[in-house]
Image 1 (cartoon, helix red, strand yellow):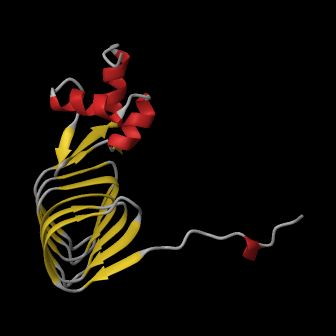
Image 2 (spheres, rainbow, N blue to C red):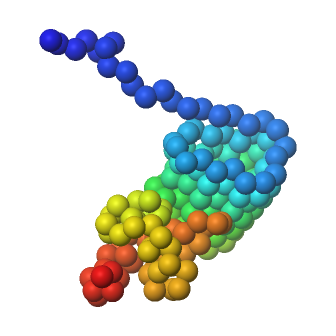
Length: 170
C-alpha cells in the first residue's frame, strides 16, 4: 500500500508569542518557537527557537538551542546550536555558542566563547550510557566537566569526550 503525502502526519509546530510584562522562570522541555515582544525578567530555558523581538526588553539568564535577538537583552546566554544578533539587537552579557551571527548594526558588550555542542543531562545520560543520578552526583562533586545554566547542568561535548578518554567515566 502506497502512502500519500497527506497520510503522513507531520508534527504540529508549537508557537508561543508573549507581548506582556513578565518575570520569573520560563522553562520548556519540548521544542517550541517562542517569541518575546514585551518585557521579561528572570530565567529562560528553551528548546526550539527563541526570538527576542525588536520591541522587547529582557533581563535574564537564557539557555536554549537557537536564539535570535532583535531587542535589548541584559544577561548571560548559552545557545546550544546558534545565536543570531539582528541589526537592532543590544546585548550586554556573556555568550557561549558554537555558531554566532552578528549582523551589522547589532551592539554586543561582553565576552564570547565559541564552544562545541552542548548536551543537557538527558542527552549526556544517553550519550555516555550512564544514569542521570550518577551524572548529577559527578557534576555536583566537580568530577565531570560541567557548567550551570540557571538550575540545570550543561555539558560541552568535546570536554566530555576528553574526560571519558581518561577513563574517569567508569
